[in-house]
Length: 331
Image 1 (cartoon, rainbow, N blue to C red):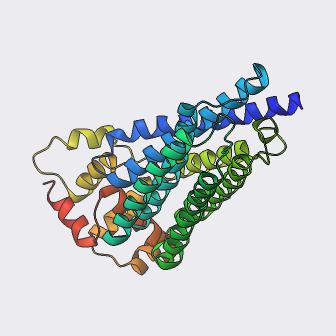
Image 2 (cartoon, rainbow, N blue to C red):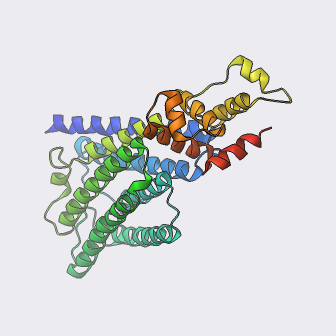
Image 3 (cartoon, one colour):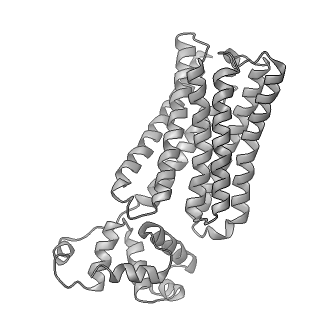
C-alpha cells in the first residue's frame, strides 16, 4: 500500500510540473495578451492556477497522511480545497465561452451569479459545518450540505452540456472540439467522484484514512490528465512554430512606406501567427475566398476555416473587413 501511495504522489508531482509549465507558457504569452483574445487568456490563466492549487493541496494531504500520519484537514485547508474546485469549474465554463466566442450576456451573468452563490455557500459549509474528518453530526445540516453538494455537481454539468449542444456548430476548429469535450468529461467525472466521496464522509460512511488510499481515489489521475490536456492545447494553439521576421524584414519595417507583405510580416510576428496562418492571412487580405485559398495552398476548405478562426482569435478581429482595416491602419 505504501508503494502505491508513492506512485500516486509521483503522479501528483507530474501533474504539478505540467501545471507549472502551463503557467510558464501563459506568462510567456503576456507579451501577446493585449493583441489576442484577452478574455480567453485570463480564463486560461485562472483555470491553470485553480488546477495547480488542487494538485498542490492534494499532494500536501497525501504527503502529510502517508509520511507523518496526519489524517485531519483544518478549516482553512478545507476552504482552500473547495474554492479551488469552484474556480476550476467556473473558469472552465469561461474558457469554453471564450473559445466558442459566445456573445450571450444573460448566460454569462447567470454563471457569474450562480458561482458566486456556490462560492459563499461552500466556504460556509466547509469552514464551519464539518469536523476535520469532513463528518457532520447534525442531521439537518448534513442534509443541507449534501443538497448544496449535489447542486454544485449537477448545475455546472448541465450548463456545460447546454453550451456544447447549443453552440457546437460554432466550433469549427478540431483542436478546440477535442480539447473542450475531453476536458469537460475529465472535469465533471472528477467532480462527480469527489462529490460522492464527500457525501460519504459527511455521513461517516468513509473516513479519510480509507478515502485517500491510492486504489480508491483516482483524483491524481484526473488532475494529471486535465493539466496535460491543457498543456497540449496551449502548446498547439500558441507555440506551434511561430512566424518570425527575417533580418531583411526587420530592416524594411523601418522604411516610411511598407508593402502589404511587409506589414503582414510585422503583424504576424506581433500576434504570434504560425507560418501557415501568415500565408492564409495574406490571402484573406487580398480578398481570396476560402475555396480559392484552399486551392492555392493545396489544403482542405475545413483547414482554411480552422486557420481563419485562429487568425481572428489571435489578431482580435471578428471579420475579414476588420482584418483588412487592421492591416491598412499600420501604414
